[in-house]
Length: 339
Ligand SMILES: [Zn+2]
Ligand SMILES: [Zn+2]
Image (cartoon, rainbow, N blue to C red; front, side, top):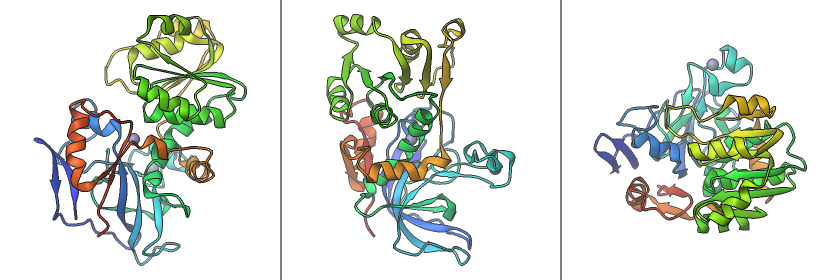
């Protein structure tokens, strides 16, 4: 099988690896689309210590059932699927509480546990599969994982209905947050960033106001505003600080981005003094189906966020561009060859 493999020397294209084998209770998936996530990039750069090379990354996947184990019911070869990458033991306290992403014996395919979608085949339990609706592309299917995580965070906001919301970071997560805030009933969404092209996309996807904080006038205008819900999706410690400062008393701050810096960025007195609620999310097992339906119905647009659907043969080059900071798109999704 073909795969992009993260090695000590960098990311390398391989074309004749042995596909993984599924057991009687597992399904072999032929991955058709795999999203490139900032988490993957940070892992390669050594900023996140989830796994060591050699490793096949990629936790955002959609594909086709290639083969089912003898004990698997409900799925057959050829079924188009979205893959939930979080695998778990099914028996521990966390799993029993519906929080399988916290399972100490589990992990995430491509990130902490098992090989991911940068390779052409992955093995998963059938409980990790969702049907890709007719009319939804594999590229959109691969976007269901970042949608799931961001949706889980918005779902925890006590009251989005009628809120003035702000989103820091017009990257893939921020663009999903802007749309989700609207779906959950926000009255206005302000999007904050430093890249005009990405902010423009934010506007097209539903942000009411965009603010480029590189502009001193726009920065000043932002500082005079207050928000019921402030969402941090950039990973910048400065944006974390801004979120707490711009949150209205009694408001909610959503922390989503990772900075990779091991130092405090929250003033706890501000949280207590303003009576703020702080929420986050790394996976929402109970919301996969809902996210897929929101996309299928057109309420969430993931298609326009994927500026770079990348054929596998070009994937190594694009990944290197991202690693070197030369990538000018919003989201890259690797397209595997069909056979
Ligand atoms: Zn991701
Ligand atoms: Zn468990």
